[in-house]
Image (cartoon, rainbow, N blue to C red; front, side):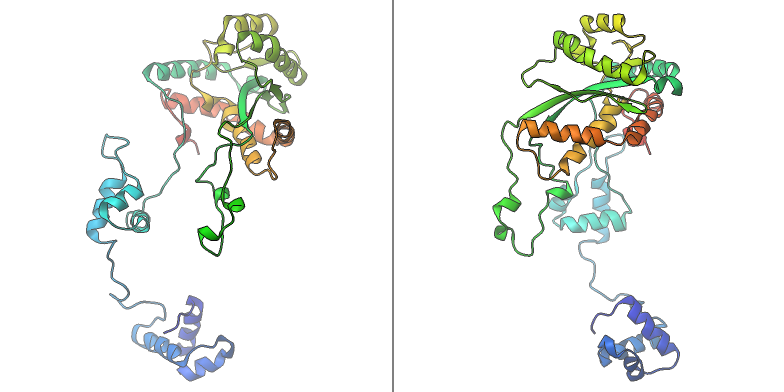
Length: 359
């Protein structure tokens, strides 16, 4: 019997219930080119079961890979053992162990076990001491930063952008579609060339509520130490800060060695009305800096979609500057306003990872 859509089967069922025979039903839809034998079979199914779409119990290809035994084995292997995180196996490992296809394992997980898969989230290593510091300092930050103060805070950070970023094999943009075989695709389409030592650009910038500072490009051979940071970057960042927030602001920076150096701390003490000191910002906490948890990733996403890609460092700087300029301020504002929510989440996680708990 040729395949018919569910809609077509329901049409035939309706006409059959009205008392029409197979030939009469076929004549009603001459453009469908239905085979008379197919219509007759569906009419017979309606007469016997009362439905054109309900399959006969036990019909169809019998389950082989999705047997009860395999379902139980997949269930025991795909999730971590009790109180033993990380003891689970991947779907490909399970397929190899049970000698069934990877597709069958995924179908068992989704259909038979009603499981969902989630992408892993990268995070900093947090030991017991680090968690304790994050917890204690987040409690102080939450008390210190009201929404009003948060809107007067200038968040800063540095980021490296590569001229040829690493290929993300799991990304849909890394796939090439073709009607033929893989060997028939031209190398220009299929091979993504990348230099072994890709040229890169380091940028420094700051953002605040309702404003962004300038994008500062660090010289290629410069070393970000206390001398360079205090003499070159901090004055520019502070100028951006005052341009956006006048003289009532809080200056933020993370725990990078150049930031926590005594020279940088003394400089900020003299130049800033208020700043977050080295013993006040939680360690290993890119999940608390709006540039880390939103701005840089948004810029990288825009760069990945950029075409054609820059071929020189000069072109890369131009592209990054354009992306920075067009970055929606409303999105930056939303990221900044989520700071208190993230601090609370870190406290609830007792200084541990919390991004997987955010909705």
